[in-house]
Image (cartoon, rainbow, N blue to C red; front, side, top):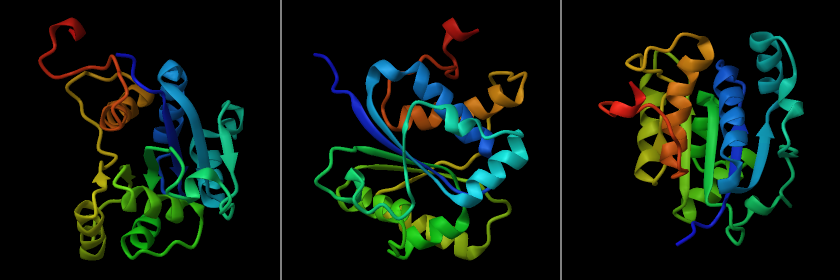
Length: 193
């Protein structure tokens, strides 16, 4: 039986870690046969951080549909849409706190609210260190509401050699969480050695 292609929302906030968003975008291009639509939300702060960390504005070069942060007419602003997964990568603690509190003051927080209320997949790639108790309590609230907190914590057992390969260890986990077929390193899998 052929799997239905996915409609995915990606939000990029102003947290440090633009490399995670770039590697995620690159991976979605590779997996395009499994994807129908990718809607992108990128905050003004995220654009600044991307330029600072990656030295360019290459997010503009991707063939995805970009939405304005206040475009409440976007399809995924409503539960009637067929967007089944949302990834916030990287996710600032401010965005995480607004989602945890049910504050839908922009399209990112509204889309996250919709995904949670419709019991769809919300994956938050939290990027902060260390966490304070408020951060942890907000993560707990989102987890209890059905979201998944996937910290931007890379793994090393695949022996990554570059920053992109290191970021990919997190991105591959995210891709698996939204249930796209992905040929990535898996612990104990002999074909990856």
